[in-house]
Length: 305
Image (cartoon, rainbow, N blue to C red; front, side, top):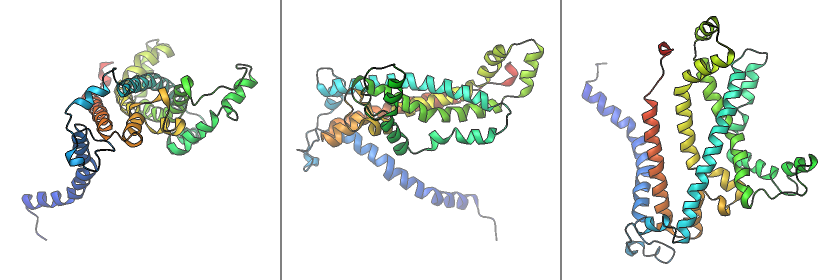
């Protein structure tokens, strides 16, 4: 069989990628364009039947969601504040726990392979299962949290965790439990990529274990750490499952942008406002992705140490 010409090979390649391009077009690009268009309309349950003649409001929806003069704006800004607080706590705590466990699993001991597999159980458990279990754990009357707090004498009566001011705390605890194994897995891979000769050289120079950790381990984990932190920032900013499963569709002040968008668009039937919020969230995530790609270009060379 003769060799195909370069033009024929390229044409055949285009046919192979055509299904993927069509999927991207219909699943991603057309809905994004459609959502951006809806965000410019006053589209709600009253104008949905005649959506082609829905009033055009331009940037009116965007002004409302970022204006404290409107109730929807106050709630949306509150949801942004909530997701920022959520990320500022979950990401560092998950990183510290993951790093501590990764350092332990990087040592040689009997049953290390089994333990490495077991720590992934929280991460691979489906969100619907994991967060429903945590919802039961945080129940006021029969939940395990209140049971042990009462037994230890730390509280005098059962606390309500899934409603009110404590709701965000419950979500943070469950999210840290669910997410730290991923941090551990990534950091463990980074630790295994550090040459043992660097530690031997540090010992010869008289470095203590703490100095080895701060001067060798942490600097060489910097590329992995940057990737891990940026991914967590992106994932945490559009958090949805943990808030929706634990707190339901109306979590009150514990709304985050994703849950508030769902409530405003599909419960209150304010499609224009919901689309405007979704567009803003998409822009923020695209900016974070751009920052992540910029950081990904950097690296650390072993020769610099």
